[in-house]
Image (cartoon, rainbow, N blue to C red):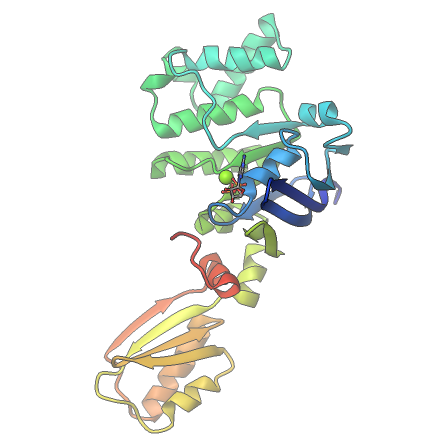
Length: 313
Ligand SMILES: Nc1ncnc2c1ncn2[C@@H]1O[C@H](COP(=O)(O)OP(=O)(O)O)[C@@H](O)[C@H]1O
Ligand SMILES: [Mg+2]
């Protein structure tokens, strides 16, 4: 069952002097929700464009659904659904007519087309609004229709490029549920985002991208366990006992300690465990804590640790 549905080898894409993708090698197993997480400009869309045969790699190779993206692009295209970052919808047409248009591109006609369009509208929860012009839709409804367009031919793998940008929280949750339902029914999903909460919540494995490279790849849980740092901020308004900072520094869960303006900032691998030990140390040293803030480690702190930058500026 651990068949690789996507396999890339040292993929490179240059636009003139700009090296957008700089040697990506990764595999996606059939049945996975695989995330590409990275800030704007990391190379996510360029990668998806190469995997869906819209752009030829400058160097390297990619196999999708068993076929080479350059040598057998027709075979690849039949097996993938692409939901682009930019909405590709006709605003003056109804939802149904938009899907009729895409369905014809995929070679569906007549009753088969009608059936498929209705099924797909139902899958994304838009059947009731099928006849309304898309310009009357909310951002979230447009996104869902965009997803439907990528699903009409029942692809084996769906590429979703930042599907929640410009979407209200409720529609965002609806999109997550659709993705999870499609995946439960057997579809492999490649999901790009610059929202770490989405990657953490949805993806079985996440490749963290920055400046055209994968800088870490694992399950969210393993990435966080190995690289994530929780932040504990303690207020010590009345001064600290001698040697306490040194004792904090030697705790096994603690990676770094800083002291500034009556506060101690502790970076910890496991924030909760570190906190218990910190409280013990402070009690024993008879140093009063006047304020306490705990931020658990997450993919944001993983990214911060790896690059020194925040995911969102
Ligand atoms: N058609 C293009 N021509 C020149 N540079 C491009 C083009 N498309 C993307 N880039 C550049 O390539 C890099 C990666 O872009 P992109 O793949 O869109 O990243 P992401 O989707 O992660 O935001 C960026 O520096 C971007 O400016
Ligand atoms: Mg993009």
